[in-house]
Image (cartoon, rainbow, N blue to C red; front, side, top):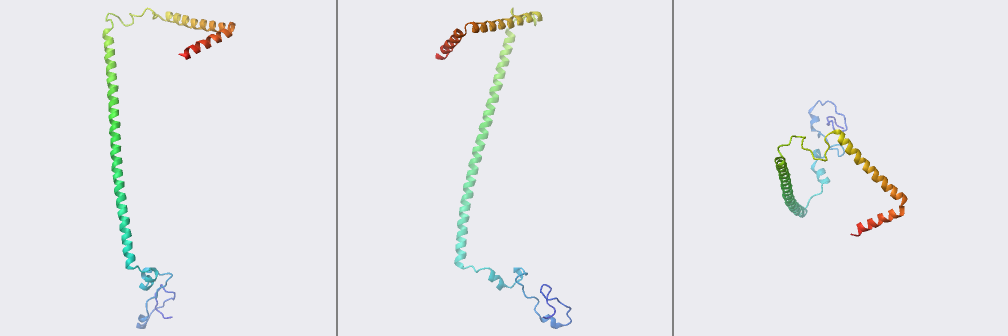
Amino acid sequence: MPLGRCSSCDVVTSQTTGPDDLTDPPCTPNDVTDPLDIRDEDALMRTKPPLGLSNLHSGLANREGEMDAWVQKEQSNSKQVSNLAAQLEKMRLDMELTMTRYRYEDKEKQRQHEEKMEEMRLQAPSGQVSGGGHHFLLPHDPLTLFLYCFIFIHLIYIAKELIFFFFKKHGMFAIGAVLIFAIKIFWN
């Protein structure tokens, strides 16, 4: 093997001393270690099959058909997006209109309530001092309020005891009366 081969080859190089070393070819391509771009064109042609002219035209026609299909799909998608955007905008405006209507109705109800309260305040007798014009059943002091509550609770207790006593003594008659009363209510 000659001296002066390149470092990418398998042989170790030594120093060159004369012009006879320049006549050797630099390096032969190694199919395993060298990348494709530094090999000769024959190796490149062996790895890629040649494309025929008819094959090239059919590929272009196929790609044009794919492009047309893609353009049509994108146009239909853009139409759908614009339709959806219009529908979304319509829904948003409807919601805002509804919310505005509800706010207006609430303010109108509040205004009417305030007018009624003002009217009631003006209709009340103006000679009354606050706390002086009580209804005759309203208690005037805490002791009277306690007495009213005691009487009311006592009446509820007595009514409950009378109902239980009636059921104990006349159980079947009471059940029959309750059933007749229930049938009469549900029959109508």
